[in-house]
Length: 266
Image 1: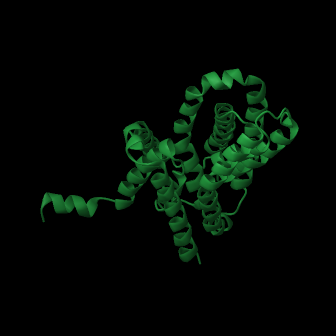
Image 2: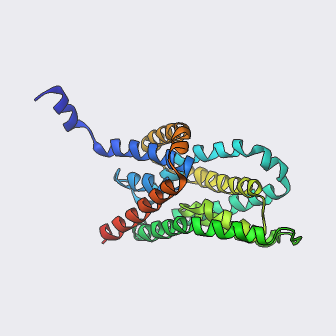
Image 3: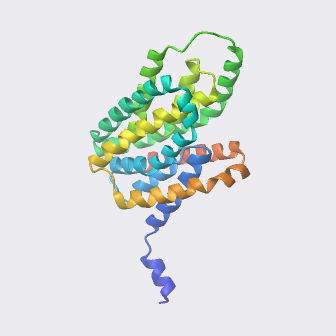
């Protein structure tokens, strides 16, 4: 037997797939979103328990999300009066979602996985048409002077961030839609508030998962590094491939993963 064939036999292809999935997740999150559709199933493929796989996925992806705060720091500073309650909503909702996840039985969560993937993929599929509708809506209400009702925005953001702490795929679009429906019109303001809420929701979930020992560190470290490399190298790729194609690819992956888990689950 040649050394090469021995290496092939010794190689654990699950590790290779985890590396590839994490790299592609970093690319997708940087240019279109939806990286969890690849990385979370890859974590499950490493024979982790479902809750551990979700927690490890959240921790692995969070550093890439943190960089978004730096990118929007000027807009966050301009909207600090709104960013503070949105951040608080992210902390409250994310913490609640993470605690509920940790208290969900493993098999119960495993049976929820295909439904969560299906809902997240559906949200992502609807993001394009709904975004276009919101653009038309903003154009129709230009000049309106009704300020957003911050209490309703705060409570609704807690609800979305609960989902982020529990599972989270597609939640960024949910927040964009929520803020637009409440009357926010400046896209930079919307993105800044979204980044604050999602980053803090995932950040508090990150801390809770780590302190509860739900993160499998050897898989998390590998995914974190390769995901960061994928996100960093995706800038050129993002300019080469049209956004509709990328979004269509994410939707296809999401529905395919949901179908796989519906078929696989007993």
